[in-house]
Length: 272
Length: 248
Picture 1 (cartoon, rainbow over the protein chains, first blue to last red):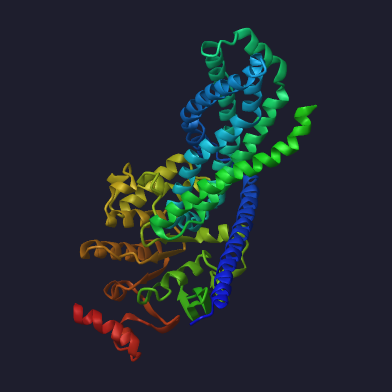
Picture 2: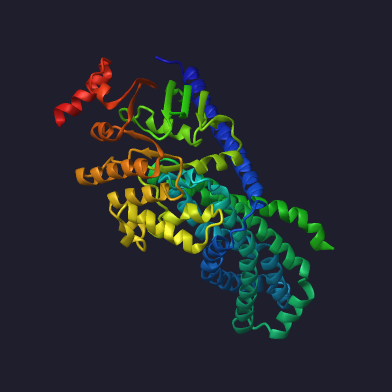
């Protein structure tokens, strides 16, 4: 019979080994992602500029995501308006609801939620499409025809995400604030003048631009992550599924981590 | 004849799996060489080294005087313009029509061609494989044999010096297999290309090859004409051939 302390030591070794391997895998993945991103950056500055594939990618990532962004924005604005009204009633400051909602939306909620929506919709689509192309050797075929797959497939998608994410965030800002306004004025009894005057007083261009800069950064991270996972997919249909799941999970986590980092950097600017 | 492809002592491993263990092979210009071997013998790995999709652990692969292992990304792009490649599963771009698939290498490397010239070339190549009426179809609408023929038309669209075929007849019925073999012979006779075909289809190999090389346990164990191959003394090659002769 194996003594309890030997079994305990084996269990501890097994657990620590698992954690260590997981850490090594994560670091290796991050290193691969960094090299991959650098190659996309290099290729982005090489001619020709592929206007047609860029516009197709804009249509897929941007136009295709408008509906989900509008619906999310309208309901987020409405719910946020309800909750802040209840909280602000406690110290008789309901007139500040418009400012609170607008600031939260422009600085945080619009870029983050737009990023998450695009990760779920367009990020998964990019990873699936590229993954399918990888496992059916279409990417290899492209390379054998002396066409750089980074230049042809990845650069247009990353540039499209970089451009369309801020545009979608602007849509989110407008729809979210209008949604909050409608709920505040029709259901919560806040006057239209109170709502808009406080928005005007408290929200600066810096708040809006800060949110848009964040969303551009999210666009880069989401698209590069999705491209990386799709491009490196292996193992047939199952491998494509795994790549897509990883693209969405990693993309979403990176949106939150990057949001924290960018908020920390932007706070002094916003507080000026 | 001058050698077009010269492979010397090529080694390649994936993890602990040593796939190529010192491959030596020379392919003369304008000839068709068929590389035979069982499943998992490393035929596709060998083919991918010739076009620079894989890099050797050791050894050299020289094509048309260029050492593939020492080319930069840009040099590799220029180098690959000499090639056409037909993949095992055709690898057609499924978001494009047959016409756009064949036109793709021509559009990407225009070299002064007008749209009209590209259209003419694509129609001619599709005519060569008997698919001039399928130009508007998408790959999902084609049969396996038709996809192979489109892949061949795409591979020869830019009149390459070398065409690589990765198991071009696998999974095809005998009639389609014959028509694919005809196309490979036509490509050599009409276009004068150097062809490397990897296959485990002995019947096709004996029909289209100038030379047949047999890959076994990571090495080329036989490199001879089809006629010499029938009288081989290598025990594995004999066993490999016997199964086919018994079946046919």
